[in-house]
Image 1: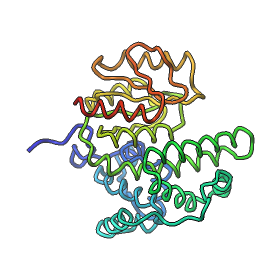
Image 2: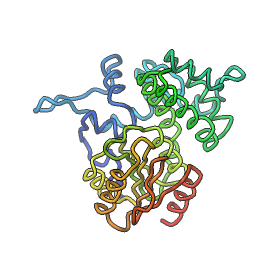
Image 3: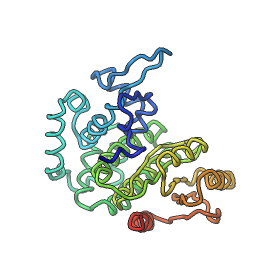
Image 4: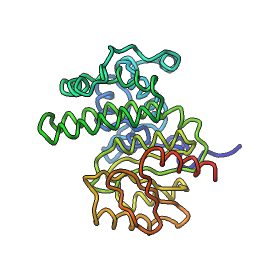
Length: 309
């Protein structure tokens, strides 16, 4: 019987994960995990001899499924407390159901910004879930997610919204994108693509969008998140025998320093491991790297990568 892939968290029976490692393995934020643990009793960490807390690796699949249910509109308390059978039923119902109806014109940008301003996460999720079902994945990302995130960024820059609003929307949209990626992750059999941002780059939505597109194309996504130290990024790529490393660079971090960091990544991973760059700040002209200009170009690159494996 074939063994588990090295990037499969279940490969080491009885292993324990720090809360940071658990967050990276599931895509659920550290603060969200802490809140679920404190309010609803899951996950259940052990106390290590050092005093640090660590959770069983078996928590990973359940946390992913809980996140999927929450992103689709179920209350966190109901999803976290649910038995495995009940959780499966919840996800099955959600998969079969049509998106909840939303008022006509609900995707008006001003209406959505008002939802963000009052932290109305349930309303945002209903609107976005409806648009996902109506438009399909690529149009949803290009016509709905990207403009909304850009509008919130502009509102923050002009003082109409605060950074807490931007963080709130990022977490809400990130939860939704992770949930939509889950079934594609389960079916993907192509090369592993490690996705990260460089140190100093904290914007995650572009990375989440890229992860969904790459998973839809059949590649296995190894999502390690934002601000990853370069040696650790190279180590992850080696651990999962990555076919490629994908880096998301926002316009806020463009420049010579970023180009040097990309060149450093290129020097740290084997030449056979491709480096693909995306985002408004992605530096062009770094030897041994490929820049994709938009999500359709990324989808084409990922499909080619998957079929060539």
